[in-house]
Length: 264
Image (cartoon, rainbow, N blue to C red):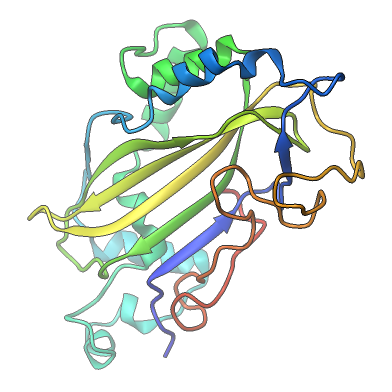
């Protein structure tokens, strides 16, 4: 019987990403890395990134069944009530990695939001939108997801209905990466059940970077940790890319594996 993990981490398609403080050709800090600009960015840290989102549906067997079939996960605790009870659960549980699926807007709403962003009619009155606009103004117009970390406090069971609240947790200073000079932005999402009790936390990290500023490969440049490029340096968030522990559902014992190379 596989063990349901208490946490997991996925590293984006960029894989390991080394970073250094962003400098120009003379070795001085890049123009948009001024104290004033960074202070403006940091003013958004700790602010809610948007309104709470309530899951449109309760945790249900149909969605779980579709998920495990698509993922090829044959853990019986996800589809068989008796097997789940024998494993020590109150009944069928949801795969932990389905966490975000319960609160997703769906394809239609996502497409409508993207279209609104393109034509300039998307909401701009949230701290997250204002922060992203400020990064765009600084020339950091490209974005890539770098990693996602989830920590589970208890399994979700049939009938649970979760609500998620998001906060901008951290914004790094300018970093020079293999993709370009940019800022790492970490959003923390706190999931609670219908009674308001915490069930899980998710941290989602992106890199907003300037296109055309990628550092040449093999430069041997070092960051403040003394490690060389490509050796698992820190991304400005205090965590090393691709090194966070814990596997997904159906993997080895809790908190003992790493998933890399998945889109975050």
